[in-house]
Image (tube, rainbow, N blue to C red; front, side):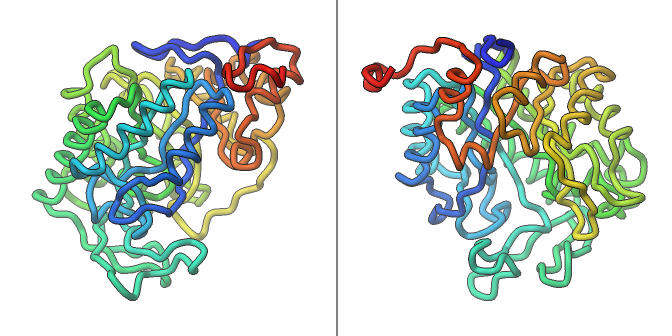
Length: 350
């Protein structure tokens, strides 16, 4: 079955095409991952996934979505992540980290506390332009030249720490309405300098971040970028621009485009159906000639296998289904008639 074929990405080989997508847990304190994160990510590695991604991990304190976000902007966080990355790797999965900056969606409450602008312990978010995500979100400060340079430097420094922590794969988060996506979309980027206006200018910051990461994470170490293929809003970022961006990112040394969508505007209108984002991954793969990952309401083993077998994507990234079933890869193998080797501690159950 295609879903259980190994996949080489740069210097790593995944044991199958199933990845645990980044899922914020909002359970850190001062950016520190805890035992919750060890168990959450470790159990998915035990469950048989080929790649286990951390949640969106902030490259700076101001880059957190909420006070509960994990980070990797200091050495204590590095040490805490090292324990988790080592355990994930010991279970046969590739440990990956998603590096992120929340931009104008920062300084908000935990989702189960409403997710609105923080009232206590708030900080000032930054963005390409001084435009709030919505009336319930804080007003961001537009980044100046020095602020942009700091963002690039923060991603670079976070990459150095991620390498030291033992992660084998890095993903840059440029989707879901966070900072790098905000620069890409004309709905949130109203700048008139070299970082606004044309597609080339709006893509400049992401490409500078990718270049800075590649300086300290050289090939063949695997580098992914998560994108939103469309804003789902008229006049916003769309799949045509995303295909062109993917071509440029391939030139910049990116190995795979993790293809999601939406998140930039509360005005988005999305018709949710199983695999609704897969066509975006298929088009980018075909037209930009780059490996892609597919996400979005992928819940069944046969469905995931078909995506890979059709050539729509090279990898499927599962989020909510992995929350419901941490052992989805083992369940999928049984359903598809594929023999896999369980952890020796679980062998008697086979």
